[in-house]
Length: 129
Image 1: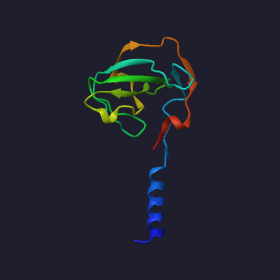
Image 2: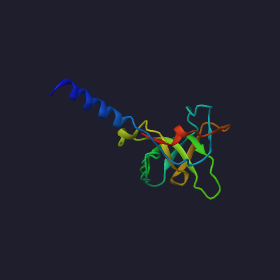
Image 3: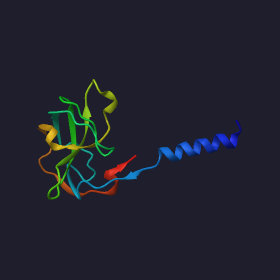
Image 4: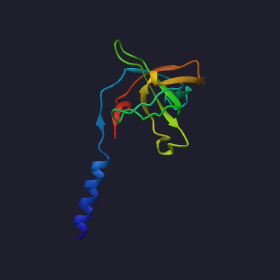
């Protein structure tokens, strides 16, 4: 195989893996513990399984602990979604992945922040990579 062909193949693969898709916004604003939404608002326990319908969301298994980083402000007629990541020794591959999930599939067990900052969502909140 020649070097130019290998380079073209690598560039093509790299181009495919860095393409992002803009998805519809789930809300125009969110509540967070800080302006960057980097601190955990609360802990929750999953009441039921949730299978992510697209890449904006995360899969949640019943009984998993969920770190809640933000709560989307629902628009009229829309569902209530939160953003967070799961923790489970059994599903280690999912840890650290942040995504949205319906607030109805979890029960808040511990609040860390009572006072929250309301900030607008950005397009980056709903990109699929």
